[in-house]
Image (cartoon, rainbow, N blue to C red):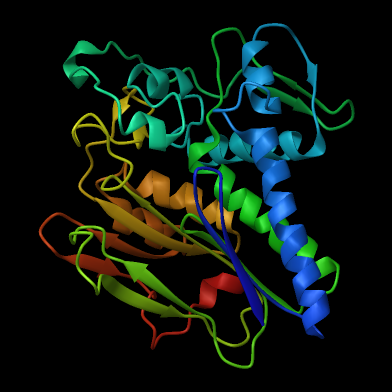
Length: 316
């Protein structure tokens, strides 16, 4: 098995590949990096030349022809919005920009930004008027609607890379895009994924809260963590998890949610929703989703997400 680490999508990325020989593994790693870059160029809201930026700029202009990658992203956004009754909502772009997260986080974190009370925000408009058409390869955005892929894009990108590498010679793949992890294929030894406790100071050497061990027969899985404790700016007063019902920052009971699902994009969506629901533990159990939830008082709740317990929902 070979691996590569690189920067993309404003975060640290890590890809591991197992194949028949080292030459194939090297080629697959190169292709993985190139594919992530292509997806970023399509989906980034921070690149004015990206497909998504051009689509957002043309909201209200009728159907816009898009690539297969962007069509898939918007289709998954709409699906998640519908299935969550609007609680997952990627139309929070205006709120995100108003709160100051309108550029790569490395730039945002260095800015002097006024207090949150000085910012007027509105509830997200929702995906109800967004239309996708696979036959014509078009997306239609209503006027005033902008899409932010932040709570789904990295997970979906990881899923895409895993599926494509498995299709061209990989026997096992792990793609980690800033903590959104997609896994495909099977190893002799189980996959083991460490979950970091973001409540602990960054200068502490050991911050592992839990080690997830996937059963050997699990050949496809996604793991995602969402937290209000990272990507904070304005002297730590703001974070990137937006409640679409208010357009402001989430203030739920949970500070961090780690979710396991069949696909990484599904895990990312569920983890984002969990931070908006005070009943997240019960909701995730109803969804048959394995999760680990952290509250401010150092308690944590686990479902079947314990290393000694088979994660039966993963192949469902």
